[in-house]
Length: 192
Image (cartoon, rainbow, N blue to C red; front, side, top):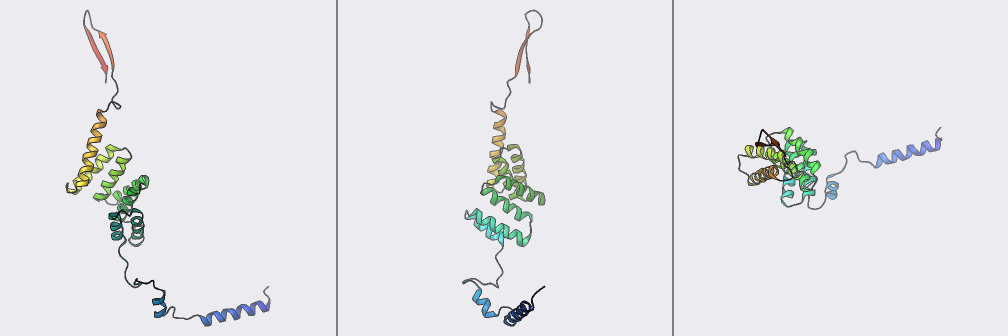
C-alpha cells in the first residue's frame, strides 16, 4: 500500500512537470539553436548511393559502405544498392560477404553488369576461374564490350582457365603398357 504522503508528493511533482511542459514542442528559435552550424535541418539529404559512389571513387571504401547502408535504409534493398554494398565489401577484402551480397544482386537483376563483373572478380580471387569466366562473359555480352575493365577481366580469366588445362600439375601421367601382339609385334597402350 502506498503511504498518503508519498501519493500526495507524486501528484504534486507530476502537476509541476506538466505545468512546465509546453504543448507546442520546440519553437522556431529552439530549432535554430539546436541545429549544427553550417547545416540546414529542413533540406533533403543527398542520395546515399550518390555519396557512396563518390566515396568509392575517392578510395574511402568504409565510408562508402556506410553511405550504401544508409541508402538501403532509405530506398530498400534494390539490386543497385546490393551491388554497391557488395562492391564496397570487395574493396575492403571481405570476399565472403561480397560474394553473398553480389549473388543477391544478380538474383534481383540478372542484367546488372557491375554486379556480374564484381562477382566474377570475387570468384577469381577465390580461385574459381571457370565460374568467373562465365560471369565475365555474361557481363561483357550485356555491356556490348564497351567497358575496358570487363574486357580485361575476361581476357585474364580466359588466359588463366586455359593455362590451368596445360599446367603439369593438372595433367595425369598416363599409365603406359607395352603389350606383345604376336611374334615381333608390340603395341603401346595407355589409359587416358
